[in-house]
Length: 173
Figure (spheres, rainbow, N blue to C red):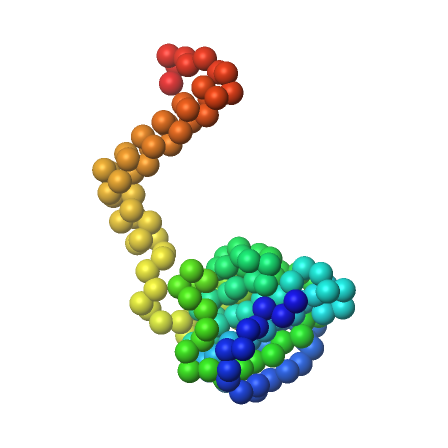
């Protein structure tokens, strides 16, 4: 199944590559803005497993959607299959994936291509405006009221589930 709907754009590259890193490096080197369809061998030859759509801005992957439904990091994991891949790039001024499909800039280079050097090059090119690193985690953890609310909700859900399964409450908690 081809995940690419008719998003428009001109086809600029269409090749079968043994290593998806080749296509990712090309996107980075050519500062591709648009999207690419990645069709792994299972989907290409057997019609199984599905394929993926990767949005790029200035050569940096910004979003991934898989034909079986996953988006973002889950789509990267679903797409990480042995090659070869048929890869098609399309120019497009606004890559067609929404914010739910967002990925870290280096996710594909690391997990799909297994190429640390390409991952580093991609991180260097990525804009500094993405705030998903340790500072965002620290800010979340510093929100004591928010963390406590999550703990209380988890505790209540665990107690309700334990009651459904017939477990007796203990005073050891």
